[in-house]
Length: 363
Image 1: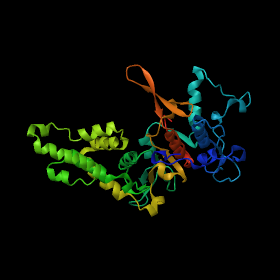
Image 2: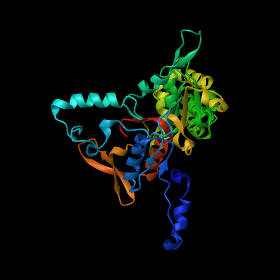
Image 3: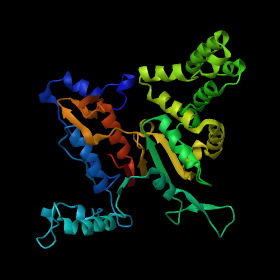
């Protein structure tokens, strides 16, 4: 379940709770023909965290051979499945670790799952390059044919962040699931207007109802403040404090975007809108951007997960609840509860990939 924040509930579980368990027969759909064993291993690591004991079986076939399942890289197999002569030590000595790491890099270069330490570099690898044989035409850097990369984010603000990064790639086109209106760009521009207004008329142009409430407070301040107080004013201060008090991550990211881009923001937004292809032509875009919520039930050949998903590395399960380790900044540690929907959402995002899955290095 990934929509409990909207009041959704697991209908099947609720129904089973009202029926005599002796009359219930459980059937598990544990085999997926969408992806192979490597992506299935990522899915199973998340299922284990949730306490699931039945693994997902990746049953996708090798490209060009409908009968042969994809084999995982040999160095990533369990050592007991290999002969004594081939066994790789689980804890290699310091003398062999460099050679082993180099071998792992070489053997996983074409693997289905890739860890991404530099998101910009991963996007750049999929950005188009100008074809010298045909003036004005852009072609994929990675493949002879066009290869689309699907970028999945947790939030709409992160979708904008990804689009902003792609903005720097000449010739790159975008598809945004749900259209640019799903990013609420007008609200973002209203936050920008609140931060940069030159006169009261600029504040009156703010149309977003939420941002307009803060514009009214700003108008009241202007009418009573001296010139010196106006110059020292933090125009986004009230909005920033409110977003922190309500833990509004979307608004906090938009405030960060406005602070980071400043006067460049209007131009970037205009360029982003121009680069976006019509929803009916999403398959023609170099990059397809979406939140994970919007792509549940869909599948794509190549998927990159943005770095705004929950870091599952530090999550521990206690009964039916999940907790992440925290650091108070003074050497002390604690824990905070993590909504199970966050883990479910990461599972949904990771299992959209058919051929390639690019993971943040903290997953």
